[in-house]
Length: 80
Image (cartoon, rainbow, N blue to C red):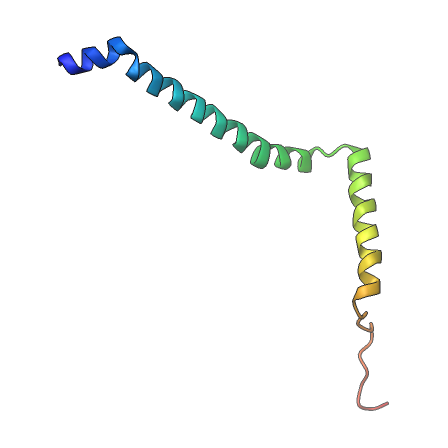
């Protein structure tokens, strides 16, 4: 029991608690930024951001057309 009182008196336990709380806040902040925020912005996406997203997708699609062979819409049949 004297050892526990000595640890509390020197602040070792308090330092461990403070470090644990800081790590918990860091994990919560990372969870919010990388998991919750993208989900929320996907649901409530502003118009200007959505326009930018589609412009970027269209630009990427145009760039891909130059690098990928386009599959014909109607496959050739053996009758022709």
